[in-house]
Length: 204
Image: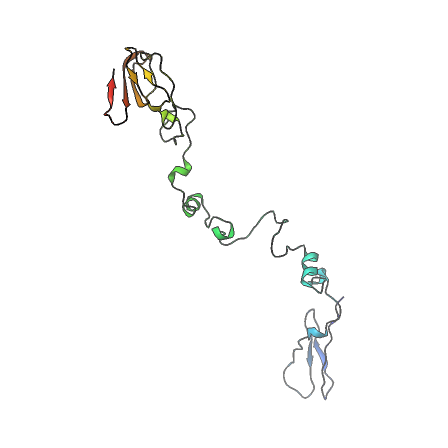
């Protein structure tokens, strides 16, 4: 237990005036006012326990250990932060925002960041984000053996030439355009292909 040592030198013996917890006040004979004695902590003997409002230690490291406080630097024992009045900035490892929209803006993300991607190569759902290969974009097609069978519209690339039912050679770049009816019965198909240095050809 810590012991506080007070040193004083007066001509007249003082007598206690207020000795309640945390206070030491004295009355001096033949004097006006009440002097308050401030302890000189260099005179403290021992350490104050945690139960007495102290740390029970004489060093910063010992105090942190007794109080269960984290040290500076890399901490592995902090699992949650509470009571923050402002969001952590990006430089501090945060997002600098207290809502998702502002956080995305601070990270430089646009509206596409919240779009759901397509679920199949020919997903027609409005507002979906396209992936490579959707509707043929960036995908490699395959040889078309039946130009009469209905195909999904799209832009495709192939490493081989396509041949229609009349034997005309098509490829290697182009896109298919089909118009089926409600039962997917062929109504019309056009294949527009591009040859190097030539204008597009339309083959019915």
